[in-house]
Image 1 (cartoon, helix red, strand yellow):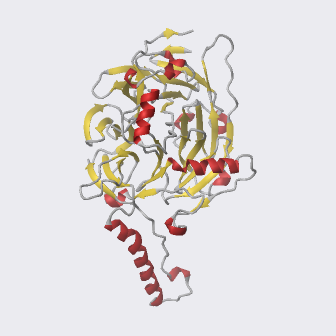
Image 2 (cartoon, rainbow, N blue to C red):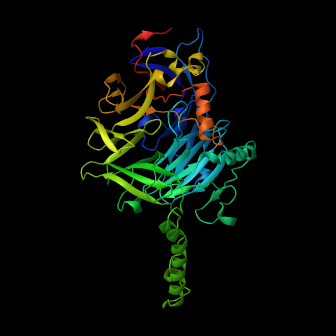
Image 3 (cartoon, helix red, strand yellow):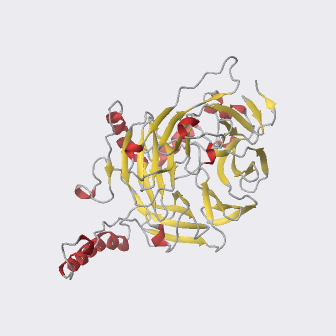
Length: 490
């Protein structure tokens, strides 16, 4: 292990031949997808190929030869996709007793794979391509009343939310599929419900919000559901509402209040129940009075299956004809967000007030991620098995923002909200920032009082970490901004 430029470096073994990468700039491929877990595993996907369970080893750690990690597992997923379907997004979903890999496609589908590469679920939510997959969970030790957890699917004109209560379905599919031969594809199109309005068996229940309808003309480039939001004055206080943020070419930042119940208003009931019946009636009348050849398929009205959307209302929108939002990063707990725009600026946004509180300039094509770093700069920050992690508390960490400026070849770390720059890390041309997917808590059946009691009893804190993956060497470095630089550990 070597400590330099406020980082702790590890060796990562990546089989670039399987990813059709013939040079050291394989990270520059626009179709490349990378996802990471806290269990020191990386998944890389490109061209219908997924390389899972990539591990890394500490450089020079432990006195003696480094132990080589287990070989990675290569999964060809062409048989799981349509002929022209491509992989567009990827993220790990880490439950208490299982870890699955979520993959989004250009046809709007979500695929869940086990760590052995078995396909568990394939479900279509929307016809547009999946832009981003986000796993949201309130980390242990954070002071917040939001105990909701979800997997969000970002589309150009819509946002879908899947609650993590589906872990029971995932566990059942793991028991059924592991060790079985064949794909056993489970594909369900949007539409069609079972008895009493319940979703059919083996189907993931979800909520869908049409943000393009709430803000006409708005198209998303990135987005996120950041947490709970107070309901409007005339709404029942017992019903949940969430705050959603989007960035895109039409607005630098847009904030929405989205309902957790699709029938929470009279307008929602009319749109979900009366509108489909009206469309069906109009279609039948059109067929009855259709003057052309009824046997001609081209002359018949198109039969459209209506999509059930929950209610979404625009709270505020930051529009600038020149400025376009490109990327969005959300801090742990959902209190802050960072927006990288097309003018080389990074905007720090207070999510609750929906106001910009800080601006950085001169960061074109920037990629931002939030991290929580120990104030003492301890090198044990990167060791998952160190006893230091069992006694860490939230007061010992500081929230920071890592900004990768690829044109300048640096990664800068700034303390939130108005703190100074803590680190200026020089990085090679071909590299990217990675953040492990947050671990989903197993407290879904507990109330808020029991949850607060668990926090007080254990007083544990799981900090958000950010790594730098280098394409030239395959090394991965943990950012630790408070750590002294250029000091050899072993």
